[in-house]
Length: 330
Image (cartoon, rainbow, N blue to C red):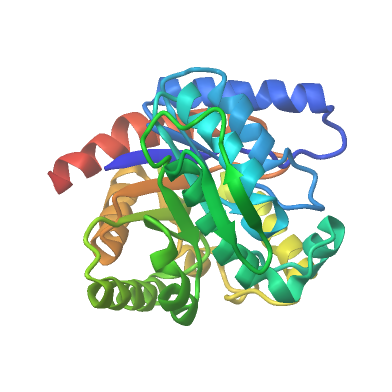
């Protein structure tokens, strides 16, 4: 079982790109100090953030000994040959400690900005994974698809690991999980879903795996999280920023899978990891029991929050909470 953190890359216009990247590097160092095992990049087109594909290389080049992954790259927006080349390099830089997390995408404006037909995203997603695997596996790759074509293409550099890094897929609805999950080596569960939705998702995943006879599969669970000395302290620290984040999503998407007007304690219950160290241990154990997750990673910081505001929380999670979780699961 391993602990990871989503790197905060959502900076406002008052922060210069140079300052923002210095902040990202400081986050990586703090994650290492606090005892995390992995750091993850995530982004979307049209948001004020570093691109997930280029930033994952920059983070890997820091050579901290931490695992590095993308959670997730919207694969249909990219040429899969470029993604395969990039993650082959990341595999080398991390000593084989990386994961390519990919998603299908859901925002039409991203696809318009990239010049990609939104209606073709699923077929590009499937072919993209196939092309990447073919390039990592074969000395001379051949592929004839609807969107991509390879004729004896050789990849350089080749990944450190034969066959390349694992590919994890990020999908949400039970129908999509049954349709897409087997493309990958693992499934990434999103951070907004409550425990009842997670149960339905996991049930769909287990059915698909059983039908395919798959046992070599990883589950990664992502949660919004904040550890303090009490739930009230955690709420005071994070609620304004987290509500701002959700309201921005609602403005862009038009709907959220939960009622934003409800009290924060109700919003957090069964959905976030939040409260005292003891409360967070119990919450994480419950989520792990429901999902059978092998990897647990968190988002702990939001636009406008200084790094110092989450330092103590990261230290509590990595040094106090997580060792107790591992001991209880051993």
